[in-house]
Image (cartoon, rainbow, N blue to C red; front, side):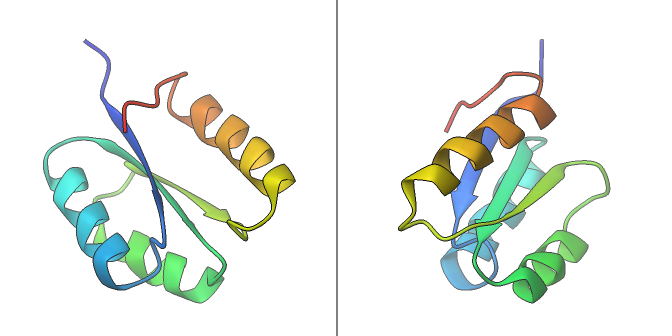
Length: 82
């Protein structure tokens, strides 16, 4: 069975970071998105190697959603469970 995948906006800090840690610990592939590239890198460094993709995006921009979700699903072998 393929690993489940979750896409988290606001993944650079706070609740987004905590959610990423929880799902990564449970074996999920985690997509991290935020406008804060430094925070994304810090969150990714807290997670096991090979379980994340990072995406710098502004959630207010529709085109950013389209491009970022396409990148994420390519990295997650087509999965987007949550």
